[in-house]
Figure 1 (cartoon, rainbow, N blue to C red):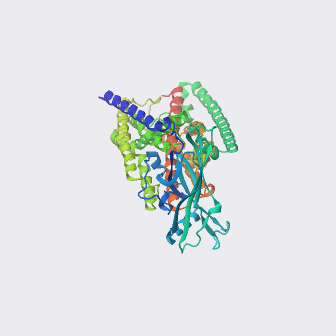
Figure 2 (cartoon, one colour):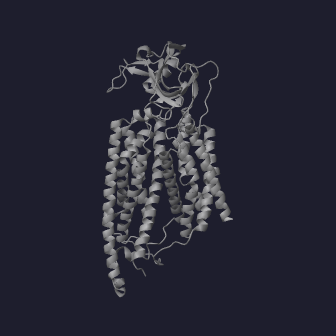
Figure 3 (cartoon, rainbow, N blue to C red):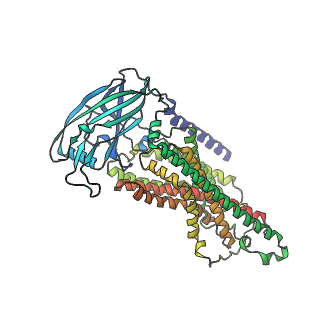
Length: 602
């Protein structure tokens, strides 16, 4: 029966992986649309929002722009597009392939005082709009404020101007559209400073077709990459990564040399001692061989944390591997979020297996509660944060609020895929687990832990050192990731990101092992929880850095944006805590088993 369940789970996972591949590569497999002269080209309106608050977005027609007659057509959205707040709708702009338009009146509209005020408030908040043409995004500002003092803030003499004219510059290669750009004409701006009276506005547009023979359809997103990461910035980025990589190599080599020399001296000293003198000569980490493999407190919780950390490590590794190998297009709207959700659901088997296997080795009996805890220990806090920020977004009528059917899709993916795979993994881990292979027998009487230790060897100081060094290895790359996730930049350097994660795992592993050795050397055998918290303490540094970035490196403000930022950064930091805690624990367990298997312990 067990083998049948495992085979069934394997088939289910294979089918889901195939479904993921088909879903994510469908758009990439298509070669793009081919047009004939005068064929209609549709411009899609998406959303508006304050430029400094990337999570605070609203529907495009929440502002009184020109609308088409009748009910406007809403476009089909994929899961990832809903996740990033897209709400695409057909715009009234009439564009045809290769037909230039010098000037065309879209509509003449008399703005009522409340409509004028809505535009004026949006301009004061630095609103931008986003449109699409052939899945190529384009952005522009709604208007501008003139006469505002940058030091004193808003003045009564400041004037607010609306941009009613848009100029579309569309690049083409033979019969395909390969680039788009929208610009405003400052010469055709309308003064809407007085928001107590009606204002007549003529909305218009122009179209220019530009040949781009050097740009193919497959490389049409390169313009966004180049505009976001200029060559100089890119070189600085590489030099910074190389500098961090060299420092990591030096640090790991330094720790390795010191640790190996110290261990070599310990092994030599323990091996040279005569058996009848062993009791008198024992000191340091060998003295606690009868307690070092005593299982920790709260084994259920510990095993669940380790299982969740292992699952997140696998999810992150597979996500970066898929992005590097081109399994899906990372630049496609919401593709990374979609892949992350699906991969997390598929790797639930690993989380359940790891947790149940470790819990079985600890001698635990409440394996049902262990399985449930493993399944909810990360999705639970994530769900609470999501409900909070989604409620805030919904109350503000923001497109960042997920519609109910998208929430149901994600919930169904968890209930029908993730949770069952966790149970199957837990069953497999529980039945395939062997007894814990400890090199030394555990004594019945618990040994007292020395209490007179200096401050720099206290647990908090140890966690600070264990978290600071790995954080320093990824600090530079963290800035670019923040600028992409909480800004308008498109991140494409996944190879560098993969190297940064490898460095992070290596440094976490080495520094945790070194600190665990020093802990055992001072005859403190409580290394289980300490290794997990030491490895995961980098997550606390990442969350602390998020405060620094919010207040010192960005211009984000407002209740909605703050809720999204600090809420989801708490979840991201928690994910790093679980991942690196798993790395620290596994490294420490391998190290502790090794050193105690080399020396002879009675």
